[in-house]
Length: 264
Image 1 (cartoon, helix red, strand yellow):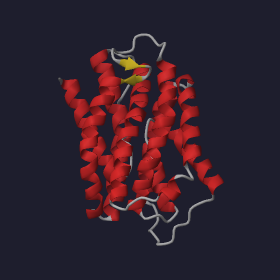
Image 2 (cartoon, one colour):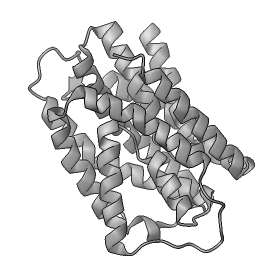
Image 3 (cartoon, one colour):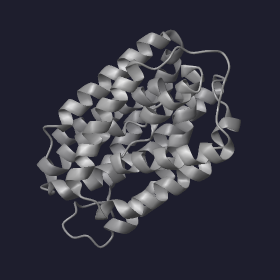
């Protein structure tokens, strides 16, 4: 029952983050699910964090898709920008998903922690928004998409904590930046999920109801509860100031980084 409550609460919070801040929620899912797998299923930390990352990326497909849909309904989406990044994002996520089991787990954990602190700082100091959009060429867009998707796959996130500041830096309105980030998170999840399934198929001592490094009960409960709150959060975004969004985002990342210091 405790596991059930933790997963449902995690999913609810993730739905709010996805709709409000344009992130897939991996920075919440990974530490929460790592804790669940270690304490309720006796999974070793090395396996638990890989399963948490894989499950997080799979859940992001559904949450980000729902978030994108509601942003589009509210005329807060530009698919012409999104398509320029899709090839690089898919390639980066797919390649890194196949490589990640061969990386040092301590490196993955420390990368997660360091990244959250850097992202919190960058968002807090991001420049003022101007009306003119200044985005890079198709080739550079795919290069950036590849890098962001690769890092996101290592950490188990939808890339929102990088894509949102990235688009803001290029003078995109923060609300549109959130919507663009949500849509690109779908392709990070799609590119990464197959690799995590494939790499975990023949691994011993994984929990019941797992497909590779995807923990199906966690995927089902987190995704279903998150979808309920995505719709509400996409409404709230238009009622919150840009400055408040940035401050909330930065504080959240800092707290998550601190929490992961005590995991494992």
